Image (tube, rainbow, N blue to C red; front, side):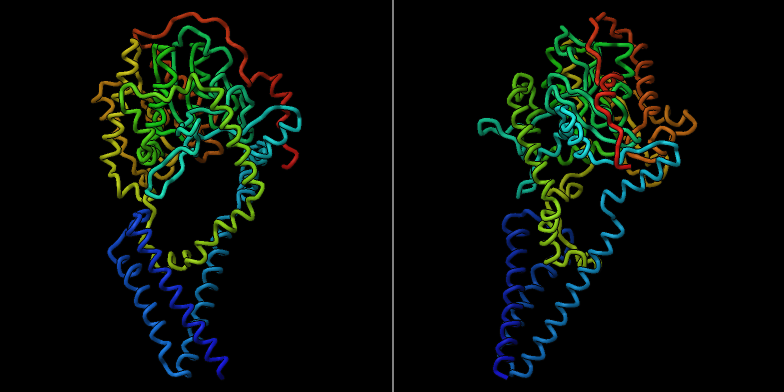
Length: 504
C-alpha cells in the first residue's frame, strides 16, 4: 500500500511540476520576451490562469487522504492516456489527409498522363544528384527569402554573414547549372549568369541594357524550360534584356535588386512584375527585416555586385548544410514534431483552444493591409526615382493568380487599390488580368489547368503583351547589341543533361 501511495504522490507532484512549467512557459514567451502574442481575450484565462490553478490543485492534493490521492492519480493517468492517444490519432489522420510529397507527386504524374505528358517525378535534390553523377556541377536554386531567419522578437535576420557582418544575398550562385522546379512535366534548368541570375552569359559585360525585369518566381521562369519564360519572349526582340527575377522575392527584396544591380547598366525600361497572389504577404515578412528596410534609404547598398565571389562561397556552404539536413530529414522531422506533440497542439486545435501565435505569424494583426500598401507606395516611389535618375522608365506589370479564374469569390487581394495606387504614382500599368480573360480560357494558361505558375502558353502571352506595351512607348529601346552566348535551353545542352527520369 505504501508503494502505491508513493507512486500516487509521484504522479501528483509530476502533474504539479508540468502545470507550473506550462505556466512559466506562457509567462516567458507571451509576457517576458513577447515572442508569441495572444490572439484572443480567452487566451489570458487559458494560458495564464488555468495552468496556475491546475498546479495549485495538484500540490494541494498531496494533503488528501491516501485513498483519494490514489484515485486522483489513476484519473490523471487515464486522462493523460486519452489526451495523448487523441493527439496521436489526430496526427495520423492529418498525415493521411496531407500525404507526403512523394504521394502528391504520384497524383500529379497521373494527372499529367491525362494530358499525354510524361511527368518527371524526381525531387529537385534527386535531379541535382543525378546531374552531379554525370559530371555536371549542379546546384538547387537559391531562394533568397529562405535565407531570412525568424528571431525571438518576430523580426527576420539573414542567416548569411561575411566577416561577421549580416548580408542578405539577392541572387543565386554564379556560373552554375541551376535546378529550378517542375510543374509541367519537365524540370526548368538553366546555367546561371555571372551574378547568379537567369540570363545568358555576357549580358553583364554590355555597356548597358535595354530592358530589365524585376519580379519573383514568375519572372525567374518557374516552371517552364529555359528560353520559354516571358522574359525570354521579350529578349527575342530586345536581346539586351536582363532578368533579375528570383523566387520568393517580394517588393522590398525587388527594390533591393533594382538598387544593387541596375544603376551601372541604366536600362531604358524597367518592368516591375507584381504578382497578386503573394506580393503583399511577402512584403509583410520582409518589412520585419531591419537590413531590408534600409533599402528605403536613398543611398543604402550592400555592394553585392562587387562581392559575388564571397557570396558564392557562403551560399555553397549553405547548400551543403541544407543537403546534410535533408539526408537526416526523417529523424529531424520527428524531433521537430515532438514539441507540438507534447503541447497537444492537434487536440487544442480540434477544440478551438489555440489562442497564441508567433509574432511573425501575426503579420495581419501587427501590420494592417493599409500599412503594407503604404509601404508598397514608398517602395515604388523609390524604384521610380532610381530609374528616373538615369533617364529610364518604370512600368508596373500586374500578374493575376490562378484562383481568380477558379474561385473568384475567394480572392481577397485588393486589386483595385493596388492599380489605383500605381496610377496615382504616374507609373504606367500593364494589366494582364483582362488579357487572360480575353484569351477565352484562362485556365489553359496554367499547367494541367491548375495553379500555381503559368505554363509556356501563359508566359508567351505575358511576354507578347509586355512587348506590345513597350513598342508603344516613344522611348522604346532600340540600341543594337552584340550576340550573347546561347542560354541553357540550347538542345545540345539539354541532350547532355539527359533529364529523362528513370523513376516514373
